[in-house]
Amino acid sequence: MSTSDPSKLISKADKLTKLSLTRWSADWKSATVLYEQAANGFRVARNYEKAKLAFEKASQGQEMLSSPWDAAKHMESAAALAKELRNWAEVIDFYRKASELYMQCDRPQPASDALAKGARALEDALPDDAIQLYTDACVILEDDGKEQMAFDLYRAATSVYVKLEKYTDAAAFLLRLGLAADKCNARNSQCKAYLSAIIVYLYAHDLKQAEKCYNDCSQIDAFLGSDQNRCASKLLSAYTEGDVEEIKRVAQSSAISNLDNVIIKLARKLPTGDVSAFKTDAANEEEPLDENDLT
Amino acid sequence: MTVIDLITRVDAICKKYEKYDIDKHKEANVTGDDAFARLYGVVESEIDAALQKSEAAATEKSRATAVAMNAEIRRTKARLLEELPKLQRLALKKVKGLSREELEARNDLVYSLKDRIEAIPDGSTAAAKQSGGVSGGWAASSSYTGIKIDSSSEAFESEYFQQTEESDRFRQEYEMRRMKQDQGLEVIAEGLDTLKNMAHDMNEEIDRQMPLMDEIDEKVDRAASDLKNTNVRLKDTVNQLRSSRNFCIDIILLCIILGIAAYLYNVLK
Image (tube, rainbow over all chains, first blue to last red; front, side, top):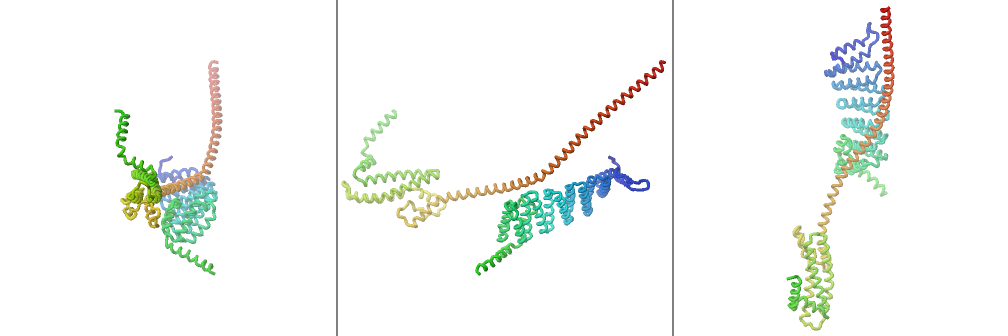
């Protein structure tokens, strides 16, 4: 463990790797060691820019030494430093590279973890990219058959969508969550996901979609016999009757309070817009029936 | 003076002043051919008993016993009122040894008897007095006591009113208790909902972590067996090394000794 100046270490390592007349093949082994030491030194000295560079080079060295695991680890460190520097493009890049390296090691879980970390870092700055990263992470896990780990990712992605006010996308994600839960028999999470989707549709003031969603979900046995189903039907009937008090009461009930925080906030803000509009719709639907009866 | 002496003295005094005992005379009178007097005596004694019971009911603390006693009193009153017409008929009958005035007096007696029977407090008046202090709006019905045999419908209604005053309070208490129970049950239900949700989540979390634990188990097993293997090989190698080292040391020492011996041999030669 040399305590010498990290920059000196870096220059030494660079010299080892650069090919010239006197050097016919790069000595990656010692170079990598030096790069790692330099990177640690820079990190301690809080010189994030140089530390990031050093980690990049160290990772490259490890790749050359065919140890993708260490390479991926260095890449992640580099990405974390890039996050400190708020260099978002590099953050995305590094995390993706790290995830690929992990996949090379045949370890899908750390791969998706790396993507998830990247997404979390980008949530505020580049939400669209964050969602992309979340989706990719979920795909990796699903391919591996480990859907249970994906639940948290789905939930995080949904909250980002809600922040962006893209409610249909959020509801679609929740339905995907329900599908994943179905595959691993996580009945509670599944029902909660469906109820959350219905609430998101109602928040977007789209009663037709909400009802369609409810009908689709009622096809599933697990949802049909659950608390969440009863709560959803109460909510929808309160909407069709245009009863604001009832809606507020259902929103305070325990079934909704057990959902995700983001969804609870949406539910408490229901009803958005004019509920009586739905009431007149329902009344109009009944009239043609009467005419038919008369004839 | 012993108790027995006291009792004998009291008996003697009573005997002396027997002629002043009205009740006894009345009884003696009644045990005759006079059916009216007999019946009259019976009714009066029952009225007295009912009055006593009503006094006891008024002082009774337990509501249930008070209500039961009042019900009994009411029943007695009803029975007595039924017997009144019989008494009236007997009153009009002429009995030998009875003057005209006394005959008329008997009629009046029968009427006054009726009033006396109805005046017996049977809890409805007591309730009226009590609730008069509490609600004060029952003035109209507070004067109404007793059960009329040939009652009109409106009398029935006010009587109904009277009855429900007591049961009203019961009902109020019952409703309040039921409301409190409902509230408590609601609190419990909410708590149970939270518990159920937490239990479900814990279930899913454990399901999620089970395959991870299995993986860890497998990997640790593999690592342990590798380690054991390595240990054994290391031990073998070290043994070998050591034994060969000893062997070399032996040979070297031997050579040194031979060399010294040869040198000495040369010197001594």
